Image (cartoon, rainbow, N blue to C red):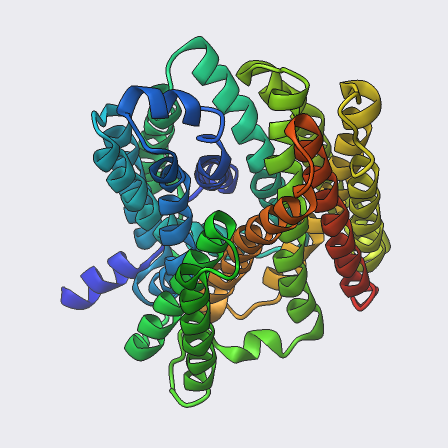
Length: 465
């Protein structure tokens, strides 16, 4: 009787792959939206809850810090304790925290809810991509699913700005938090029924590695955040960065000496997978300027409102999504290298183009063209990376591989913002008013274009097939 019960519990539930994929992608979109959806709502949050200027930044930073710091741990927990179980637990925590954040009546409660949202996101995020690889075992179906995942992950940043503008303009900033609740409930109710639990891989949790990785990544993310706010020379930025670097190096060393590492270093033995991780770090680093500085340009220079600013990013979001959907058909014909090379080159061109902005630039000649190039380029550049990284990863390491992927993405975006804010600040010295703002932005865009060229160089190392 006991044996029969154990077999029943271990057997995957009946799953409909299409429904499972829709639920997983819905969760991924929620997690990515929350990185940018709050941006447009920040001025109204400050007025309503009485935030100080310094405190207001932590509405964004609290989520980024916890999400980025715990991704590696979340990925390994899914491998050890069941990916569907950890995925659904993370969605439940994220949904409850979203509801609490929408009801918050003080600055402290809102930031606390953002911290808990980050906890839920770090648990659910790595399991999303791991569940795709276990649900879709046929290669062509897996490529299609991973390409859709890439489209959601990449376009989520732009969609967040659009959705944030809509909700803030038409309703209230609180709706930016409440919007997660119905989607989270749907994922929880139907996910338990339609998402299969992959085979468990019993192993010991690498506690030392978990502590080192969590503290190390969190310290780096915090240091980058402080560098963006206080400058690279500030002690509050330097010491976390130094501590984070030491902890991460110690973590990597520790992974060579344990039987069940939290991040198996064999994941980086494959050349294409290692290069894919590199571009998942460099790509978001370069693209952060498009989201951060173009939002400021449209609102502060061109005079756009929150709603118009959100819709201004629609061409980029559409470009990313449409081209990501084309990758499953292009990949068997061309292989990953030509697709990624073309995408990174277009992305670089879009950033060089937008670096030519001036205070008198209109939307159509100065912004629309670069957005289309960056959207098309981003769709082609990032979609093959998910396939390169996750397409051949051993099932036992899928959660760890997904956690590493999203950690690279988060750290790249956070470092990118810190670096580009510093570049913009340095370039704007000696200028005043709108001229200072535009001069700083164009310097940041130029720096981003150089980083994008690095992604092009990495893409040249991919194997053709």
